[in-house]
Image (cartoon, rainbow, N blue to C red; front, side, top):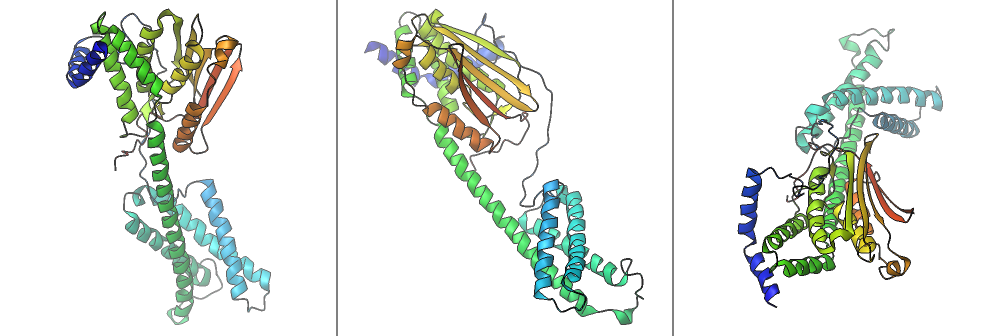
Length: 404
């Protein structure tokens, strides 16, 4: 009981201790990744890459091949519908369809090229003004193509004069173009709002998943700290601060991402607590030289895997074991690997897992990288391995504030 009261007293004075430690770290040469002097701290690959933040808009990227293909297919469908609705020519259905298709595709692709060029400026405005600007571009292109088709370069045999001006022709074309453009922009806006809602719901689920931490880790940590309060109060204080940093990371909701360097530093703090409890039974190997330290990853991507490795692989074994943490950058994709030796068969049966931690991480990866992240597990040479693969995002990639 007195030991537990000492722990409670330390927690009560935690804020003052953390401020003092920050002041000490700022004056000392301790590494920033949470390792202690004499420990081999993980090293990273230096990329030096930078990307710019792209403003979010409900307008799609018109510069992609998929957007151009979508415009062509939509134009053909519109031409087919208009030809069916207004087929009264003696030239034949297919002839009318071909002329209308050519006319509408010209408008669609020309508008797409212009919108591709001016999109960096359009995304700076709010939804209303960017929609008005896009609508104006489409109408201007429609008027230009209609004029060229009737009285200009696309109809060289026609004599241009004011008397031949057909206002009904232009009003009809601009009316159809305006209705289609307005309906299309409305669809894009609603789709954008729907994506934002889905993202908000996904981030809410991500927050809930991120907030889960195994109770046994808290109990083990408090027991370890309690056992040190009399024999080594300085070490108990340091472990308590490491535990506070871990829970700060669990409860933190400001950012969607953390850098690989910060995640590794957090893992080092966790390992420092476990090392005091397991001693020489826990052996750690770092292989991160090929991994960029500025890579953005979901919070708590490595620490739960290391915790899993210790709980299922190191604790049950009488002789302990090794935990290897590695990473590399391959074709703009970041690969992170956590591997641990397996205990004896009898001890292994006593620690049958429920796969909750892996399902948690898999769900968070899917929320951050929809359809682009993978998590693989395997057993090779009496070692259990977890490998996660996802796109490489540098540090200054968009990191939205999730408190909004």
